Length: 427
Image 1 (tube, rainbow, N blue to C red):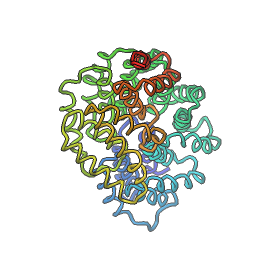
Image 2 (cartoon, one colour):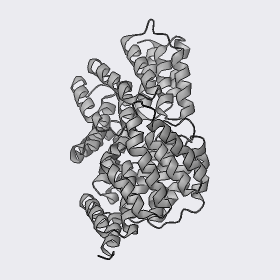
Image 3 (cartoon, rainbow, N blue to C red):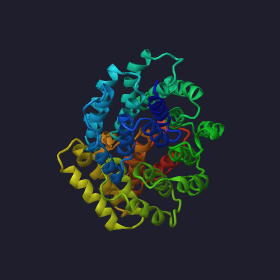
Image 4 (cartoon, one colour):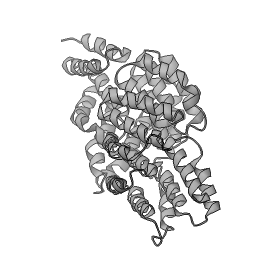
């Protein structure tokens, strides 16, 4: 193996573990081989998957410099998928990667890019099938097997096969203890199965593996830990994580800003006072308000603007969403049918028009997956719908929604709170 190829392998490992400095490995690959195309392609993926308008524009500029002549089959496929992804054509990009991975099931970078792009479309569950196709081609002794297994585990979790997902995630965590995906998988399982105390035990027992600066997605793991505290009614502990762990290390890009936004919103619906936190958070979102191209991120940006009482910022976000809803591209249905209605309903909720918020959210509940994100992340909207029904005094709707939540997570302090509030409403 050439020196450049070894550095590319190291970069792919850092990229797919979400641990380490991928860019440094890419720089070493270019130093060893100034014409290394895969280094440029991986850099373009990092920029594109940021979902940050400025970074995606840089990716398009970089892609324009990559000539098709002389590319290997793998490189040509990544270039084709990148051009689609950087243009917001996420379903088409995933289709290109899926076809490629049938022929190259050991392309870890291809798997991660497809997984991430599916996640932006609310389709994380598709990784269960994609990884199931690939794993039989792997030997358990091969480098990267644990990473591939962790992709499978997260797909199973989002597919709803929680028992298998937990087993697979724990096995992958033994093989790749610093990996983001195995730790993330088990955290999701413990969240979705209503085991917050077990979740904190899992987190606390593995702190050295997920909280170091080399863990590039540690903000999201801290968010998960905060959610376990919320589910146990430990709101002060959740706010302390917000203040002391999330904000100090968070990068001002949409994929990370969604974490504090969602946490603060949940806590405020429970009666916690966020104080000046919203006004401090919104300026970080302000850098994102032009050029956003993610329904999930834009919903969170709109919520942040509403809570910071900046209607101009909210209207800026909403106007951009409506342009996307009318653009006639691959993401138009997600904007038109889900993102815009959710953002408008959230405004009604903040304005105190709870009945209108309920009527705005109920019709889109079945399609929430199209906004993107995981099941746990999208629960923010259903959480708000339940609270809106309670505040609107709509006993039947509130009880129905609380029944659903308690059936899924009976040990949740939050869900019991919703039920108590719903039962207290006049019949």
